[in-house]
Length: 421
Image (cartoon, rainbow, N blue to C red; front, side, top):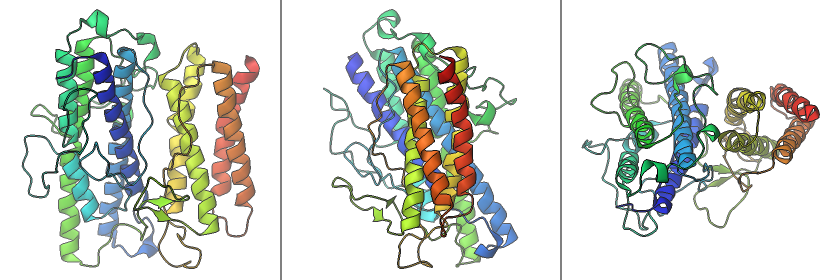
């Protein structure tokens, strides 16, 4: 039983890390799919693969929502939002299932479904994992074997921790992020999520904290009260698995994804095993742009979820930079671009690379607003300028210059805001 605030914070940080890891692996699979007529799929197959890609992006958005809700709970109980995570591939001590960057295939979808599986469901596709080899909490023997079980532990902790609401929920509600800040308060009729299938709200007390945990559970594993038109992640992955298996039965050569190496990396790390070192020079340049853009987006999201004296206008600037333009105009096109580029310098027609989601920067909260905004603006300038330079080189991929211009456009809002101050 979780008895202290520190134990609950630790439990929630592990949930935040897991949500972050899941977002990356789902995005990697979505980026990997075949998109062009020359890639060998029939029209029927291509339609199905496109639908799977949209499903993976939808689930990724909702996992980002889950990370946001966990951040709100952390803020509510007096802690900081947590955006750090282990490196890929991760088969570490806390998570009893592999978290890896792999292209979309039947085995990957099976793994996704088993990660999201409800606790009370037996599925022959899923082997019961061995318990982690380290305890999760600081002082009690807490382990978990699924995402569902982790959130069940968090729910029990919120309910049973021997503190009043006034003593437990000490963080300022004004520091949290709700649907209003993200323009997500206009949901579809009968939908679980709001705009973009995402719902966010602030946490004030036990009822709102439990509401957040229950929403995460409903969207991930599903519950008996789930809305039929809004299937859970587990249900969506099972449907994808069945459809993919049928296509493979009809056509044994069917392959929905490009030939992408697993866990691509620019650098070797002593504490990471099982990654693929990318050696093609131009691909390494684009991977570096992706990693720097991803790190910058995390800096903006940390500032967004842990803002201090930002005005409403400034919060809007962060929102429009970090959530939609940067994700849709920078992260996604770079991630998809990398799946068309060679992984190895001496194999131009060999395996393709992919987005490594490498974190080489410690993402801590920058407490001083002007310094934080200045640093973010400077980083955008450097990334945009370097990308524009590389885009002029002979082997540069098409579209790189446009992405550079997109980053420069986002940066103009930052620069104008800094000048105004």
